[in-house]
Length: 276
Image (cartoon, rainbow, N blue to C red; front, side, top):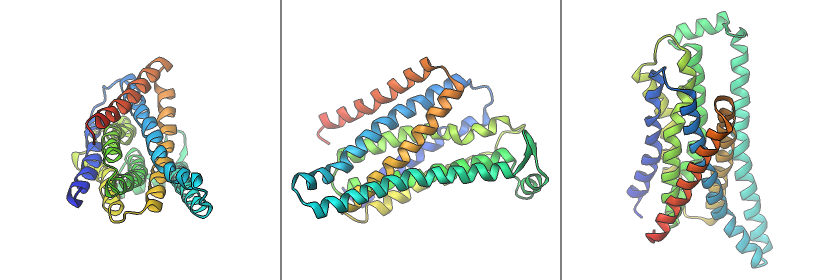
């Protein structure tokens, strides 16, 4: 696969985040519908979590079966380090974001003078600041997704690369809802320029990660990048499940999860049947 083709895959996976952003200008969309889409995205991510980890752990198991203890120890450490970094970096980012949000308010629903001054200075309301923080967090995990796409394609694992692109692309299409959710309480809808900026912040790292990931073809680097993506996927699954619990019933969530898992496995089966 050529470099241009690999970068195109990364661009496709990242650009789909713009699909959900226009919802920020609508205020009559039901919470149940949003929750169903979030649950579907969660099901897709659960499949990707399994698929990515399966491919990442295979070289570790091969080293173990070959009794190559040095290589096994090295790859195991990379796998653990990548997974921990992918998960905990977003956990600590989320804690930092919540701490900043608490400092910005004197009480429930009341903005502090500092917050109001900052919002007036840069033209952002508290809700838009929160949307900006969410977009940044999504961009962090999308970068690791791009790394996984680039590395898989560079190693010739085309089936995994296509599954990642389709899965991440479908998920990114729903991530836009997470970015614009805080904006539904604003009196004025966000501008298209602001929504476009949020899309670039959250989606461009997928393309950039693909660019970085395809630059090297190393089994060790592949293990690290794939587990990094798996850790970030697990974090987003945890967050999306929280959203589903808050805004929808278990029945809606279960149907969404089932649909997402079905889409994930169906996509994989189609690619395998096509010999990709």
